[in-house]
Length: 253
Image (tube, rainbow, N blue to C red; front, side, top):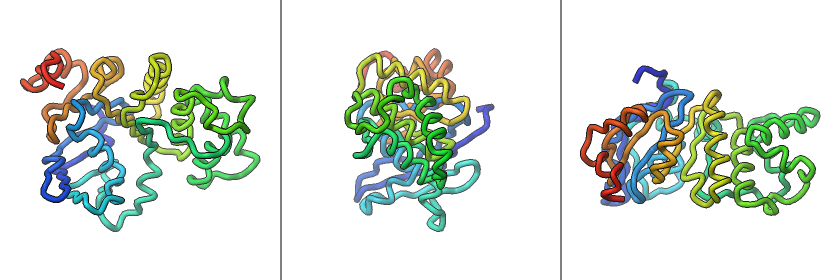
C-alpha cells in the first residue's frame, strides 16, 4: 500500500472465554480514504471496530492481545488515556442514537466534550457541523425541537454531525445505513465520499454493492480472520483468494 498508513493493526487476537473471536488480525488502513471492512454477518467486523476505539474495555469478558497503532502511537497500551483516544474517532452506529435533548444541544454536547464551548462561537460551530452532515437546510429553523422528532435518516446525519463536533480525525461507521431507506443511505454514502478529504473513514458493512460504490480500500473478513485486503479496484476485479471469489460471486453469505 503506497498511501500513508493511518491505522496499523498487528497480531490482534480477541477471546471471549475459550472462544477465539478475532484471529491474528494484521491490517493497514490508509489515511484520508474510505476503508470498508467487508464480510458476512457474524464474521467479526463489528468486534474489530470495537477494538479500534477500545470499546472492548467495557466488556471484562473480552480479552484482547496485540497492537493497534494510530499515526504510530500504540493505543492498546494500558497507560494511554482512553478518552483522548476515543475523541480522535467519531462513531456512527447501526441505528442512530440522538441524545434526549434538542437538535442544537446534541451538537453542543459534542463541542463541549472537545472543550469548545464559548457561547459566541457555539452557534457558528453548530451550523458548521450540521452543514458538514448535510442537515442544516432541513433543521435550521427548528434547532430547539427534540432530536427525536427527526426522521431516522435525519437522526443518523445528526449523530454524524455530533461525532464530527468532537473534532476527530477518524470516522468509524458500523453498518451506518442498515436501518435507513435508500435515499437516506445514498445521502450518507455521498457525505462519506466528501468527508474523506478531511477524515480517515472505516466502514463496516455486509452490503457488497455499497462497498463497491464507495470503498477505496477493502478488508475482507470471514470467521474472525482476514482473508484478503487491498485497493478496492484490485480486490473486486481480481481477488486472489478463493473465499473472496466465492463471497463476491454470492456463493456464501
